[in-house]
Image: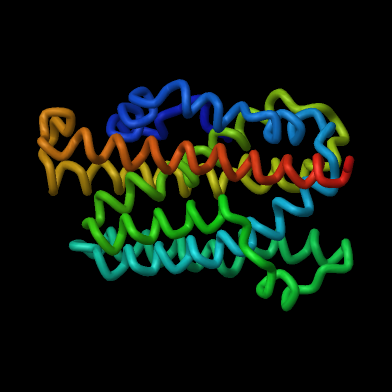
Length: 237
């Protein structure tokens, strides 16, 4: 069963991060690109452009989750981080490869695609959060993607139109397996925060910097949707 829309997936820490940047979070999860996926009105050229860029993004995102294995302090942290790397490389990326292949874009072309500036900014920011900070810093920067796509997928599954041409994308993130991954990530964040900054995370001197990392990554997610829509504008010229 899909998680309730706007669910915290059982993590008070994630819920507090999201509440701290509520406006940015709503702009990300209800972006015009997302609404175009929901009702099927998104230009297919914009969708394809997004998938190609997201393939590039996921390659870097996978590397960052691999760094999370290195930054882990417990076996549970290592196990989930490694499982997410596996899921990204061997499952989620397959959606992009399959759709693009049907459009005549092979995987070699995907791998060689030139990164848009929004992609560069986002992936390098997330990686820098891991290199400069600890495991919890990484979770703050990585989680907007994990939970945002879970929340979007659950909402679009409930509110989207029937026979939607983007149903494959929606089903990927509404799928119980992905929703379970969100719940596991939420539990990991709770224990990671408790181990590093205490059970009342908001009292930690680090709290504001963690909120800033989460907020920045959320704004960069919104920028990624902007990038996707720009392909539609370019086609119209």
